[in-house]
Image (cartoon, rainbow, N blue to C red; front, side, top):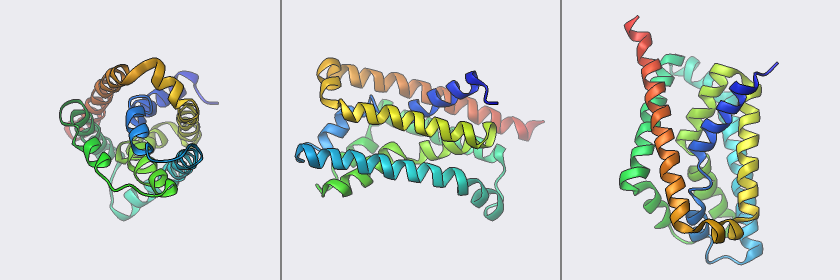
Length: 201
C-alpha cells in the first residue's frame, strides 16, 4: 500500500526538478521554426524519450551504481544534493545551461524532441538522480507513478502550451521557474545533509 503523502511529496519533488512550467519559453524558442505538426512530433518524441530514460535509470541505475561503482545510498544522496544545488544556482543566477541549450543548432523535429527537450531539459541529471533517490527511499511503484504523473502534466502543458503562455506570459513563467529553483536548492541542501550525516554517526 502506497502512502499518499509520500507519493505526493515525490511527485512534487520531481515536478520541481523537471520544471515544465518554467521551461515553457525554452520549449517555444526551440520549436519556433517548426510547423504545428512538426512541433507536436517534437513534443511527443520528448515525452517518449524522457519517459524511457527515467524508467531505464530507475530500473538499472541503482544496480550500476551499487554493484559496479560501489556507491551507497548515502553517497548518492550527498552527490544528488550537491548536483541539485548546483542546478538551482545555475538557473537562479547564471543561466548558462539554458543559454547553452538555446544556442544549439536548429534540427529536425524528432532530434529537437529527443535532444535537448527530452534530455537534458526534461530528463536531465537532476531528474535522473531524483527518480533514483525516490526509488531507493520509497520503492519502484512510487518512482514509477511519480514519473508518469509529472510527464502526464508535462504532456498537458505541451498540449496547451500556446494558451498557457498567453495567459501566464514570459515574466510569470520566469518567476515560477525561479520559485521552483528555490525549492530545488532546498531539496538539494536536505539531501546533502542527510547524506553527510551518515559519515558523522
